Image (cartoon, rainbow, N blue to C red; front, side, top):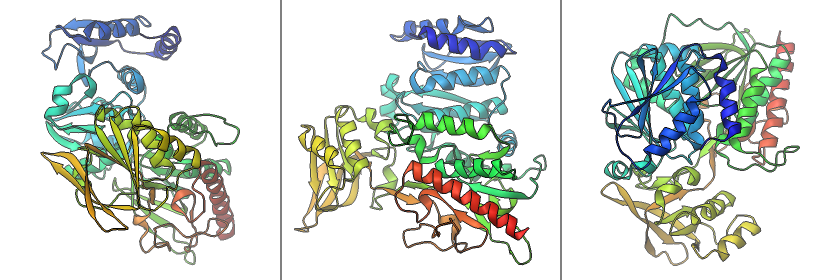
Length: 521
């Protein structure tokens, strides 16, 4: 199952293991158990510090195993074969169990360690989901930090009865102590927000050292934010980056072919490259946290800007670069939010496999919508595309492919009105013919929303001027309407939301911040 190249790579990774890690596999019979045992046997063959044990521990099924360090469970479980995108989750769990440093910020580490309640997380994933590993890996780290926490990755494809019982139609889907905790398109930052909401006592800690005054604080870690942080660090400035995740929207992009000098790459690879580049510099990175409020300070009195974080921390900074990007735009119709993860989805690559053999809709006729329809057509029974305008906005080559596909129907000049669900699952989409004003219903099982992006700028109310669409207004040097606060990338008014443009704008914003510091010092 594992190629020689993969095994050699894992052998290199495990050379510095300081503790023996046992993979304890539940005994019993299951059609996939032989495959899983071979997978784990091959994995353990690369290091004497990896041991496979078979034991009856009354786990979920014979294809469930957990990690044990020096004879003690460490709270990390896998139900299924963690291959595909989840292979890295298993390798990281092994290395971190053996002593490799965790990747969490000290503030977040302190918050997790303060949780007193017993927490059992179940993370339902799809091996084709590129968002799921982030959630699995973060919860694995939480388990390593706090003995009150354990977490289990569950491959939904191997537990169809459990998926049906819990009405799961989107991944990652996270349950806490048997009850739904978060589902749909979620990330680690959202999990942290939910933990803070549930256990507010974890906010604030005397153990976390206050950062000194920063020269530049970058909010966001997509292409614009990463470029800004690197350019600022290269100028010898004190730099902090605050972000819900490294990569931003880029991490969700499957194929990238327009980044000049890089003919082909993926969002995952590009994100990894950006992370590696960041690591070359002395940049304080606070990942999985959010900026709740920005105080503008006063250039005249030399008072710094103050950034209030979701962790309770306050960071003082001479300048701020806003590079928070954008998020998926919602339809804003009844039944949408209520059914996210139960038929309403925003990522066809992640959630498409749950609708195999079923009828689905894609709302949006731009490039992302038509690309989603073509992708889904290879998995589902039929795709209906709904477009608000009389004509599709996608590139001609994509439109021609979609129109020629026997499993894709395109309905134009319509307005979606309501998501209809029964017994916790989507069953239809109500829409209006904009020409005749007739209301119709399309029976279906899933709705994939692909209507563009919305700037992540709500936290800037009263701080800088924004357009009616929420974009931060900037000039040619990335200056906002507030001195010392700059903006770059998709959150700003810069035209053409492209990776290469965002990177250039991030660099420009950083250089402008440097000039501002020089002038004001």
